[in-house]
Length: 201
Image (cartoon, rainbow, N blue to C red; front, top):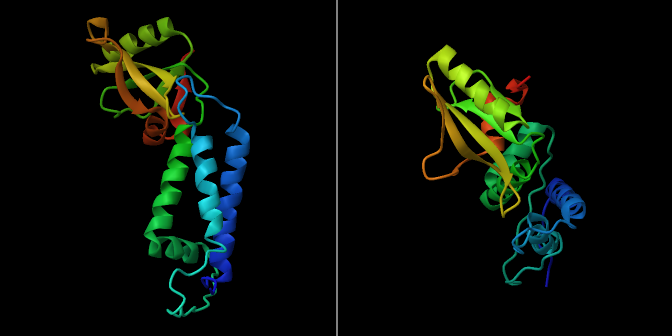
């Protein structure tokens, strides 16, 4: 059976993806989840051979002749065009990048931000007491509600925020019904911009 024909540039892009995923698997491969579920690295380890197989996969219907048109990729926009034309590849890259970002461990345990994510920045600290005090001071000075969030690692390896309490002009109150699931820390960081995450002094 004949090999599927792909361009040299497409093969290079796939090879680069395989290389990146292999490094991710090697780096996080020894991690063990607390609940015994598979980690992202273990799941990627199962998917990587399939992706590598695209480079040498044989046609399932040898009677159908595939026409290969060689295209020269010259710049970044050409690569974007290649990805846009292949929705499966586009989805896989987006999911892989998002999961990788969400799995980066933040440097701090707590985060303070306004309830609508409308401020110019958010604040981080390792001290829950300082987080509560700061949240109340912000709420009183800006007449706006602020959330005190704890940052925790989830079963899927991502780091998510949980609402521990709410600060308003009357003070701090614990979250009704216990700690509530909120947003991934990476989403909040992207919303404000990584340069606008400030440490509470």
